Image 1 (spheres, rainbow, N blue to C red):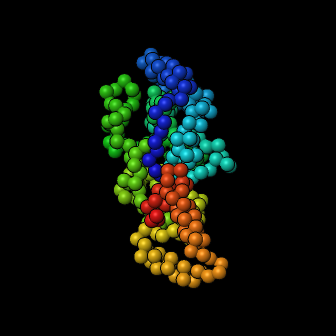
Image 2: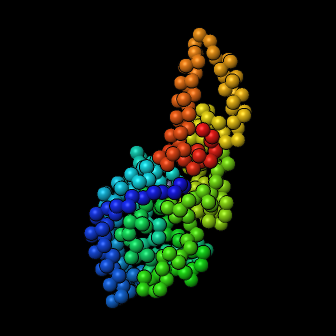
Image 3: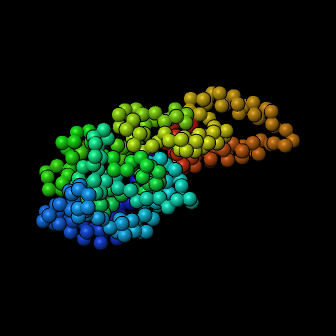
Length: 273
Ligand SMILES: [Zn+2]
């Protein structure tokens, strides 16, 4: 994860149709909250409009703001899978890990809220995060909207992608480590140590390790560079060609540590430039 900087411009579909639906839901809840709170099977369950929050313009803006990466695992996956428009605060109901069943209502008034939407891969969203949304203190929960409890009073345990994940997560080489409970829970409920992801991060790490210095290894690397030059400075490699090789390698490391780089938190915490 890295901190995501979302566009200040709310997509038009959310600002128009989304706002209308939000107002309607808030009024409907006051008149009759049962569709939002019913848990009985077969009862009249409130549905939300994917055609608004999942609109192409919304998804494309999220993808652009997130450099085509999942908000949780930082994978670039869109060639094989379309990805989801993910609600950080669950829309219809939520789950507190360790507590049986689901709680209702969900955050129905944030279904079309730009600040609550992110682009995520299907594995992070559907297999791990799902509707889990624990708080530090459940008494602070801002549900329903009529209560005096406000979103800003909530202290979510899972890391929000607009926070700084590095306050709670760090890498030692390719190994992801939790710095606190929020990091630990985010690893678990975003599936950040699942097998396929570990493999992908390891191959990215090994690719960078082949070309750049690990943090703290600068002295060793300097010596390696001297050795490399001594061994290769011959008729095949001139000083200029070696300089070009180092520049290309440095550019690759640079591309990996910027926000657009896949697994950039790992790259920026593990490699020097
Ligand atoms: Zn993901």
